[in-house]
Image (cartoon, rainbow, N blue to C red; front, side, top):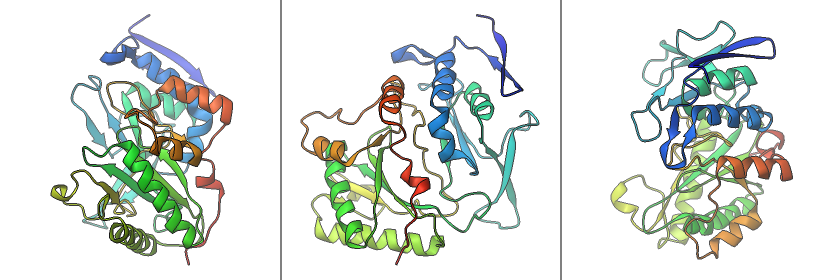
Length: 301
């Protein structure tokens, strides 16, 4: 294969380079395979990216090498790559032009930059004060693992149900789980963040042996941190169906509550770990299990 290649996607010419470069050495997974994955997953990942600013997490030398987060969309981007301005956290008058990956060509362009991970905001670019969902990031502190996270996720679902809210779950693609509460209604971050914090603290009080809601690392050993702080207009969260920079090309994967219940009882520490090929097979068989995140409308009372 040539060092540089070009393909046309929906009438747009996309330059591809170093396609045989290995980005996941343990799996011998190349840049060409990363691009192929994002093309094949586009139909289900794009609805969760479209209309949102996205932080790129780039690994030019693969998952074992140097990486960096890129907020400002690169100046060398093609003129058809859309951007959206976002005010910085410290200075509202200063703006960063984030990339907006709204179509397959844009997704392939980002993948060619060795952007393995996609991190969108919880809000749409057209209304930066209004999150479309509440996110709970369940992060296990060893020896707790994903099975402990599953147990906590079930308790979290229970308390959300007590508040009349349905939720959907996905793996982080790394160590833990992430639980989303679809809203798609009139609500602002001050409301969602306060609610998420209260829920996390309530669960910590109910299950202090397993849960911590405070961020200090010294408190996390053997417990699951319910990170409620992601509900903030300046923070991004790993996108569903995004690859992760792990030894294997694992993916942030939507899972059913039946799968969460089964994993909570499993003896395997590798429960709910899915690679790119497994995720493609799941989507072909089941469709987008995370569709409620942008389809369901709920009120935060």
